[in-house]
Length: 398
Image (cartoon, rainbow, N blue to C red):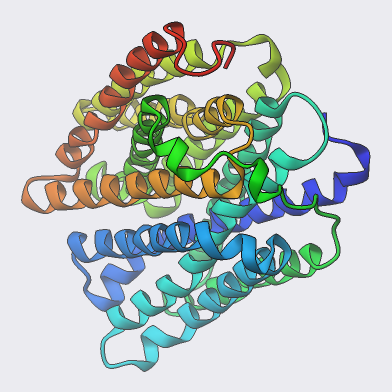
């Protein structure tokens, strides 16, 4: 467990991941509103998701160099300032500019800069804290993304249910208070001193490792598997299954998030006794099944169960790959986490965009079916990873 002197740091990191959940999950909840008010197509909506994660990708890449120079505290405070600014701009800019889409894109870029920094910084902050059971701590940290997703979905869905869609802009305005509060927290909590450059595993060493490159590919698959379902679940429930928006949000993305939170919290409590590699292999098989069930079932209730199963199956993919890689390269530092986040965000960009493109040319059902390629590659990659670890690629106990 984490040293008690750093509990406030851990709590600030939990709030950081709830903020990340806000950044990623609030826009899809407004997709139906954006279609109604601004006439956006599936492809344009998918491009907003792409902008979100491509921006995070760029931030991931740039942070490899600048985070260590300006310091973790300054960087994490900046992250939440950008997140708050993006939410505030989202509330007003689409209604001011001649092209609402441009306003949505600009606000998306702003809060995505914050999201990219949060993704890069929060995991290594927790990993650096003194204490044991790192994999369990990482999974528990990432569970707050899931519970934040549940919180954002429930509160936002209820707000849209009882407030006119004409007042949708009040949602991002109200939610901007969360990153502002978290910003204040991070100005005060204790942080571990950064690792000396001479002690870190260099990026050149990492990129020469076949095991690390495979882990990076699996991060891409993790992000794509998760967000291909998460970003489209709300719209799929309403447009694809004919369910009301309120019920669709609660039974689609919300149930997805609940199951993801349960999986991560369970591992956070029981993780020391469980082999992560074997667990991820089972998760990949379940994820393949979930996409097939969701996309092909003619019964809405079964499709929604498939969506929930997907949430459970992807729950450990992202934190699990971070834990496996960090255990194999304990001196990787912020730069290693930034590269892994870059891979994950690349997957988060590719997956939803592929789904949107296929949906425009056929249906959202087939868009989700196309995304089955990502957990399939994840499964094959895990089998290769097991073989490489058994042959002594990196530590066998990860």
